[in-house]
Image 1 (spheres, one colour):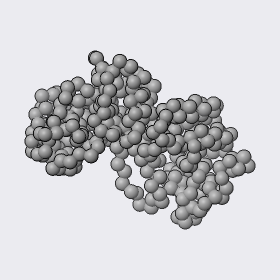
Image 2 (cartoon, rainbow, N blue to C red; image 1 turned 30 degrees about the vertical axis):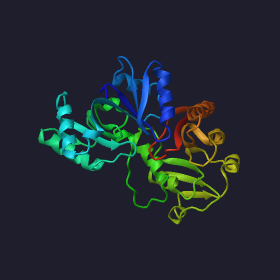
Image 3 (tube, rainbow, N blue to C red; image 1 turned 180 degrees about the vertical axis):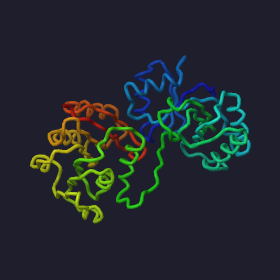
Image 4 (tube, rainbow, N blue to C red; image 1 turned 135 degrees about the vertical axis):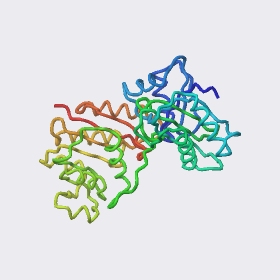
Length: 342
C-alpha cells in the first residue's frame, strides 16, 4: 500500500454516488474502494485540505468523512493486537503529534481479527497516554485514525477541519433517549447535533406525516407548538400534549385548507422524491418568509445523484438549499434543509 491515499467515507450502497461527486471535481484522479463504505482517491499533489475544501464548496451530498493515510498494517501482520499497537504507535511517533489528539477507530466491510475495534481503540489510547499524549474521542485539532479493513489496518492523521466529521468514518452513534417514540427521531437528533443550523426553537411547526409522533416529540422538546398532520394515530404521550394539534388528514388537503403559518415545516413521509418535493413546494405558502424546512428524500442506489440533484433544482423555486446530505441514521435517504425565499 502506497501510504499516499486520501480516504472518504459514505453510506453502504452509496459509495458509487460519493465517488461520482469526487470524480466531477478531480477527473484525472485514481479511485478505488477498500470496503463497502470506504473509498480512496489518489491525485498528483492533492492534499487533504484541498480535498476537504472541494467537498465543502460546493457541498457534497454523500461524502461523510475524510482521512489522510500515513501508514498501514497488512492483513497478515494485523492478527495480534500487541503487534498492531506497536506498529501504529511507531508510525504515528514519526509524525509531529500534538499533546492532545482525537482517536478514531472503526471498521469497513466484514473483517475477522482477534480483537474488536473498541479493544483496538482502548489499547491504542493507553499506548498514546503512556507517551504523554492526552487522548479524546472528539473535539481535538488533530485526529489519529485506524480503520480495520479487509486489506489490513489503515492508519491516518489529519486536522479536525479536514475530516468533515468528528465521528469515526462519519458514523454518528446516538444512544436511545428516554421517552423515544420511534427510531426516526435519531435523524433529527443527528441533524441538530452535528450541523449548526438556525432552526427555530420556538414558534409553530408543521409535521407532515407525523405518526407515530417521533419527530413531533423532538420538535416539542425544542419549544415549538406542533401541528401533527397524519390520518394515523399518535403515540398517547404526544397526543395528550396540549401544544400538539393532531390533524387527521393527509398532507395535500391540509395544506390547501389550513390558515396556519409556520416557522418550520418537516416532512419524513415515505414517498417518491419528486412527489416529496411537490409537497414541500405546496407547503411554502404555509411557511413564513425565511422559514425553515426539513425533509427526507427516500432514495435507492440507482441513479441516486441525478435524482437528488433534480429534486434540489425543483425545490429551489421557493427555497434556498441550506444543506443536503446523507446522515448516518438515514442510510437510504437524503436529508434536505431549506430556507423559504423572501
